[in-house]
Image (cartoon, rainbow, N blue to C red; front, side, top):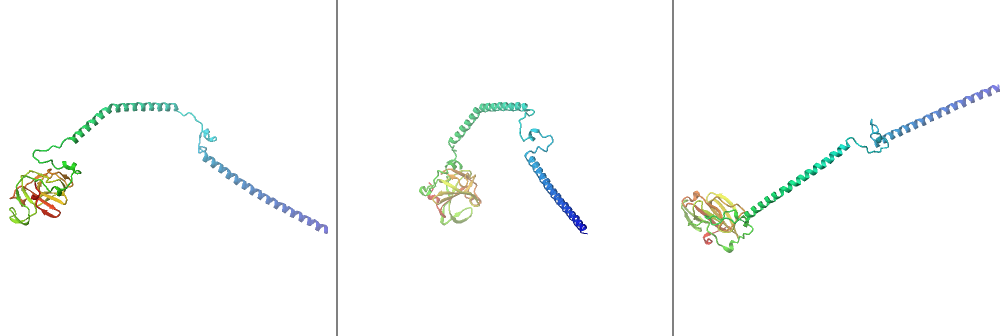
Length: 296
């Protein structure tokens, strides 16, 4: 009985040992499979990395028919290209053509240079003649027309207080005197009133001269005195000259004493009985003064 018990115990132990061995074998198999799987993953990752690196270094690896000298180590070799000799010949031909064109251009410039120089010299001579040509005076005027005095603008000095003398703008009789203390009779208006200036008799189209060196302050048209000029004589003196036509001056222009600044016009309706005339009014500041006291 004891033998049977001992034998059964041994069988049980053998079975247990077998099971342990089987379990150990299974565990080892699983471990080996895990290791192999890990190695496979690592190998696959390495292959992918290597392929990617090779692709980045040489984009021609994946192209069909890629040149072997580009795939093998990325070394470049100098190979004679098709038509190389033709390109060299064409380049030489272009150089020769350019040289010929440059030479022709240079020759043309050299031929035209004397002509251009001559033309420039003629233009300079003409300009010099125009600059040095003396101003021509008309026989019917006392001085040059307005506009020629623009060059003298910087040289003119307006110092009327020192000279206090004026030219007659036109030669003629005084039709209406200056009078601000009492009234005088105006035939056309048939009334008496004060007169801040004088009315000088003239003829239509007669030239009107600047009474003194002056700068034109204003040009305009007035119902009573027609076209007029306001002149700055300097030292707070100003002069108004009316009953003009074809005014030859513009604001800002300097006029020399005696220079023509316009012509006598037909009288306005305020002076029809007096006839053609020139109205002259002299002021110092805002105060009217008798022009006859300053006319030469």
